[in-house]
Image (cartoon, rainbow, N blue to C red; front, side, top):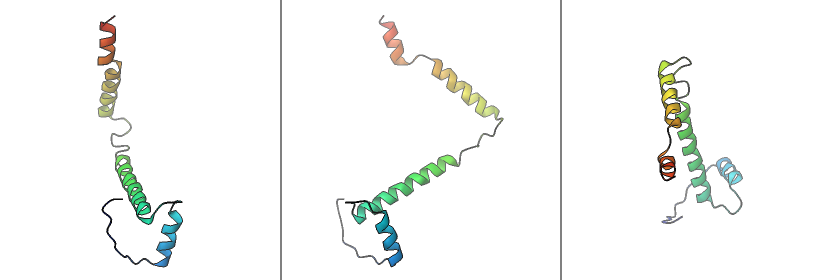
Length: 88
């Protein structure tokens, strides 16, 4: 970690013990805190995606249109395939 500054923070002993129990071998406390913050950010991102679950409803005409377009697009040859077959 670059640009380290020294700060002293006070933690209740129970919090310190919990943090220490999550610390991996050879992991520093700053690395531990960064890892936990990164994990929390990922949970938040995943949670936002999960908020969309069921947004279209079970019998949504809009979702059916989107599915048809996706499948139609998948059936189209890719640009790479076009180049390969055009050179044969």
